[in-house]
Image (cartoon, rainbow, N blue to C red):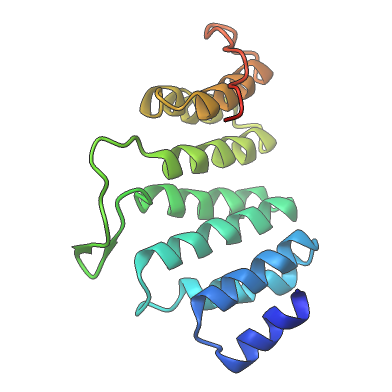
Length: 168
């Protein structure tokens, strides 16, 4: 698959889907030094819809976390979360907005952010992000459970741990 994705990027270097997929394949192969330039190419292309740029920012953060560059990963996770990935805007216009849906992508990003904060010894900040997940995404059992597991691993036992959600 990697060879085909490299060919796709060679054929269409501005295709964000090809670049993200190639980056993902490289990241999964633990080749983040090669993945990050592909994600950067997407992130830096201001002509693309915000969703593509958000995906690239999050992917850069994940690679940096894999490389244990936690401070840099924190910065990129904050870029992703602060971009309001559940209500993206491109050139001042909404890409799409779902009504009455919790900010699931942001909550998932906050879980990743909490992990890199914990790795840097920033427990209070990690706890704040995790508590926010439990409130902002209270209707998502899976996200709340993951947040509560991380809270307990940080020694915060004031929130009762829910049982793992059943797979559906």
